[in-house]
Every structure is written in C-alpha cells, then in structure tokens.
Amino acid sequence: MEKLRNIFFILASGSQRRIDFLSSLDLNFRIEKSLYTENSASFESATEYSLKNAYLKALSVAERNRNTLVAGFDTVVEIKGKVLGKPQDKTEACSMLRELSGKTHNVITAYCLINLERNIIKKEFVVTEVTFKSLENEEIEWYVNTKEPFDKAGAYAVQGIGAFMIKKINGSYSNVVGLPLTEFLEDLSKFL
Image 1 (cartoon, helix red, strand yellow):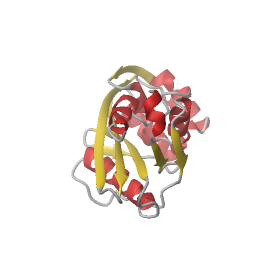
Image 2 (tube, rainbow, N blue to C red; image 1 turned 135 degrees about the vertical axis):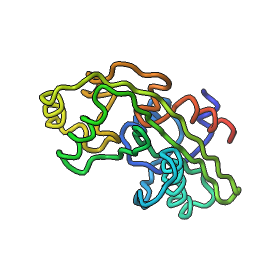
Image 3 (cartoon, rainbow, N blue to C red; image 1 turned 180 degrees about the vertical axis):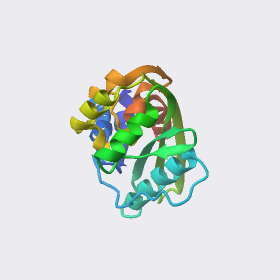
Image 4 (tube, one colour; image 1 turned 90 degrees about the vertical axis):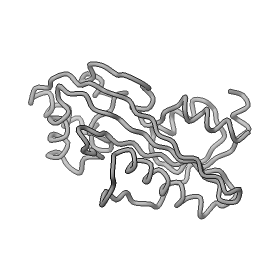
C-alpha cells in the first residue's frame, strides 16, 4: 500500500464517496472534475454505457493534463437491460425504487486510467449483484424525502440511509458505493 502513494493521479470526479475512499488510503491525487456530460443516446449494454462514460470523463481531464495519469469513473444500476442513472426529480426517484423493489439488479462501475503522453488507456468494469427487499410505498416516499437518492445511480446509497433496503450483496461492496477499490488499486499499482 505504501508504494501506491508514489503514484500521482488526477481524479476526474466530484463524487464525495470516491474522494473519501481514496483520501482514507492517503493516496497522492488531486481532484479535477470532468467537463463531460453523460449522454444515454445509444449503447448496446449497461457495461458499454458505463465504460464509455468513464473513458470520456477521464479523457476530458486528460486532454488538459497530457502528461499526468487521470482516473475517470462511472456507476450505473442495470435491471433487466435497463440503465438507471441519477434521478432528476422525486417522481423519477420513486419510480426507480419501485422498479428495484423486491428484485436483484446489477451495479456496474467502470473506470478508466489514461495518460495521453505515454499513450496509456486502461478500461475496466466491475459488476455487483444487489437484492432489495420488497418496499412499501410509505418506505419509498419516506426515503425519497430524505433527499439522499438524488445524486445516486438507481436512487439509493448503500453506505447511507438506503442500506435499510438492501437484502443481499453478491460481489464488491465498494463497487456499489461507486469505486471498486480492490480492482482499481490493482490496476493503479501497474503504474509504479
């Protein structure tokens, strides 16, 4: 772990959860939010969509920092082939939670490491299965009124109040939070 502190990178994300995770490890990075705006116009799969967004977020920052390693991320929730991003309003948040209620869905986090000067592009993704308990309408309304769902893919935070909805997680917990820590650190270590 100590060796990883020798790698400097730019985090192309304003996600407080990612910042907190990486800061807790005392890694050597700075934050520069990407200028790329996600577009769900066309994609073959949720994985492809997430990989494309992670790449374009990282590229947006890498173009301004050509000789520095840049890390971009994108997290989506996928249920039966449908991608659930961040809800735009209360109605959409409630709708997403009703759709997830009592079912198993996938949380996909893609990440991309780019250094344009060294012509390095590494793209990867991690999938975790999450099962929700069956939710009552009152629970959904109460949870949405906490305002926690509004900047979260699939309208929930596993590390927050939303934990009450989670029945089972199959795979990486940190991936559901938005940063597949084990896989990302393994790939980051290749830049030593």
